[in-house]
Image 1 (cartoon, helix red, strand yellow):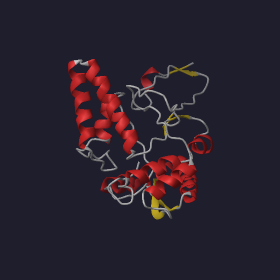
Image 2 (cartoon, helix red, strand yellow):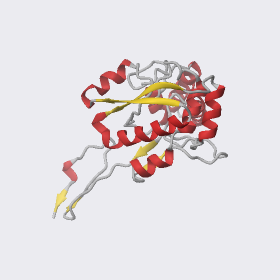
Image 3 (cartoon, one colour):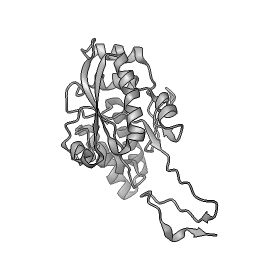
Image 4 (cartoon, one colour):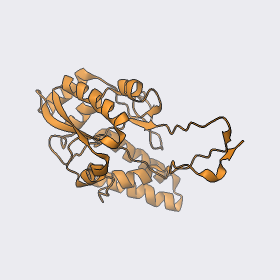
Length: 239
């Protein structure tokens, strides 16, 4: 996520430059070992889906990122901090090191800020961190659910970017209302509308959807996946 209320990230061209600077494939290979679904790299002509999450059309393109940053008025880049939750350092630390290296190539110099897990939510909810990596787990698999919590101008605790855009709010409200009354055409156009706007405005750069991996002894059966990702022992059996 990126906090768009803080300069220079309040400049959409800066955000777009960063979306082209992120080393997506390196993150997939070296950080996640392929154990996630990438949220980037959709074909340039791929139509927007009525779904969330879905991949953006961004790819790593350092030259394009440099050009966009110059257009934004930062030909020499700038300095900032890149924060992460130390509680999930296994993924977050190598991810931030790779992002730091890539941003350095376009002149954005970052100091990595390691925040202890116990303090992470407090720091995040202050909404003052300029740049950070974060996870949101949407329990309900509806696009308008995720967007209402994470992109809507009501500015919930999960809209960690403090993103406010009246056009976005209108589209989210239209999707929620049309879902309630079963108006499928309005629902579909509203969802496509807010996804397109999120990808055009890039207040946060989607990276990946992690897999939920479970390892069990051979004599254990009956595992059931639950949306909250916690283990439900009731269905498990031991032979």
